[in-house]
Length: 477
Ligand code: ADP
Image 1 (cartoon, rainbow, N blue to C red):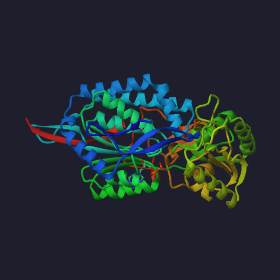
Image 2 (image 1 turned 90 degrees about the vertical axis):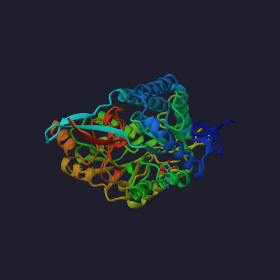
Image 3 (image 1 turned 180 degrees about the vertical axis):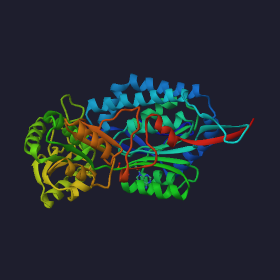
Image 4 (image 1 turned 90 degrees about the horizontal axis):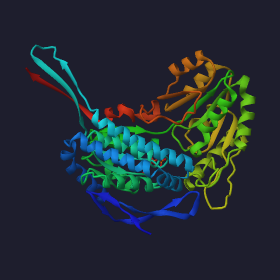
């Protein structure tokens, strides 16, 4: 099997190979991927530092052309890359192809942003002086990504980093190096100068830590767990470095008495179980007012019976496997915790077998949960959700906001009054009305508040906040 290597200073370099395993079929090895050392990470950082002066001054047309070419190749290969994604991560083929298209759209968007760079010219408060406000690249950007969006998250960090003239050291999640390798290969062949983008696949504790400890990285953008996010924060403060964190969620989905039942059920099932519940915007707290509660739970049960859990690559599969054994253990541990805490396991939650050995779990719905239970407070990151019964809208809103997190928040209602009030008062970075808590556009800001996120928003033109630094220049006329 060919070894997919790391890219350092424009050269593909080897290392110990690690097998990338298909969670739908653990006998299927997706590929061998090199594991970088701390020394490799240092070499990658040095290469990015050396490449920065030229790249940061490169013309906008060169950057535009490389990002556009990358977008076009991703789009042209969407079926193949989508398949690779589903094979290494376990989300369904439709989800894998959809995510790949989104990555192509992101590169296309930021190719356009290269041509739209602008500043401001304002009058000085003093006579005969002009003031210019411009944005400049930050320097070497470290990119650390999680396993649950193997192509979209790398795309939404790499594309703006390069578009605004930064150089990059990129460390993807160990579980899913395939899509990351593929987009780095595409960008490399699209003509990026040596050292502008470096790929170091490997362990967080080795490669990621070497990045955190380096004084030569000026900004780190991270998506992953709360624990690692805190390490990124602490190390970055130490180095006076910019940092951006996207971490967990415990997103509420509120269902009011006046909701359209089928809209509510579709949105709740999507929020809780699609992509196997492995989205930071997934909803695992479904907060339902008492007038609709029993009808809603019955309809959820019926809808859940129709969900096909199987090999991600099979036609007709709605829910793929859990990503690996460790995550599966976490999911089943939380199912046991929910039962111990007194919630009722109304549907699902069993380990299931299929034709191939994989990490298959029947999506689980608890009822009679309270917001104080651990299953309502801690991020599970699997297809496990709990229904919390409340009296009315006011209680629903209070429960929705009673969480340390604040990424996404949803409501199903036909009341303009409640929808408007919820949009205004939900303590979250993103609010969804009659839509799932997950599933966002690529051209508008993404991010949360409270314990979910830190730093400027990602995506869309708001990405410039993180990937640039502002300069104010004064000139005597
Ligand atoms: P999860 O695996 O739940 O997404 P993690 O925070 O463990 O969350 O992983 C997210 C990313 O952070 C991965 O690329 C991982 O390798 C990386 N990572 C883990 N530990 C460290 C660390 N000590 N320093 C830097 N990066 C790390």
